[in-house]
Length: 169
Figure 1 (cartoon, rainbow, N blue to C red):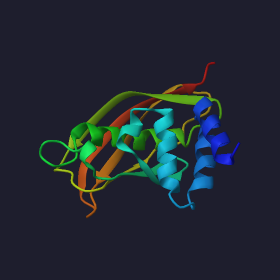
Figure 2: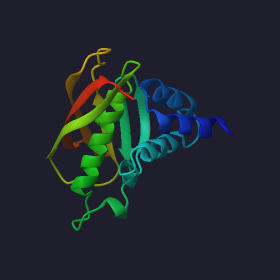
Figure 3: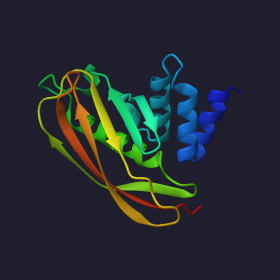
Figure 4: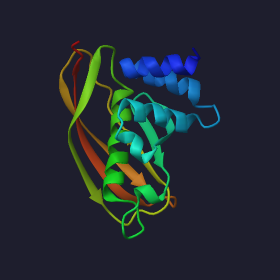
C-alpha cells in the first residue's frame, strides 16, 4: 500500500488535526498536491467534493482553499452559484477549525451564514483563521472566511459556528 493510500485510509477513519497536517506536509510540495488534499477532504465530506476544492495553504488554525470556475458551480447568470460559495466557506472554516484541534477533540458545524457582496466570477479563494480550541473543553467558536475573486475583491463572507468537544467513540 502506498503512503498516500495509507494516509487517506487513516484520514477517513479519524480526521484529526494531526492527520490533516501530516497529509498536507506530504502533499504541499508535490505537483497537484493541493488538488489531492481537496480530494481527501471530499472523501471525508462527500458534498464538499462537489466543488472540487484545492488546498493552497494549511497551517494550524489557518487555511486557504480555492474553487476553480467551471460550469458545474455556476448559476443562470454565469456567476458562481450561491451554494457553491457557501460550500467553499464551510470547507474553509472547517479545515481551519479542525487543523487546530487538540488530540481527542472533534467538531461539528452548528450555524452557517453568508453575505454575498458581489457576483463571483472566476476562481474563488476562501481564507480563514480560526482559534485553537482548548483541550477537553466543549465550546462554540465563531469563525469567518472571506471569499475573494482573482482580483482580490471580497465577493462573499461566510460566518460559521463550530461546536468543539471531546470525541466519544
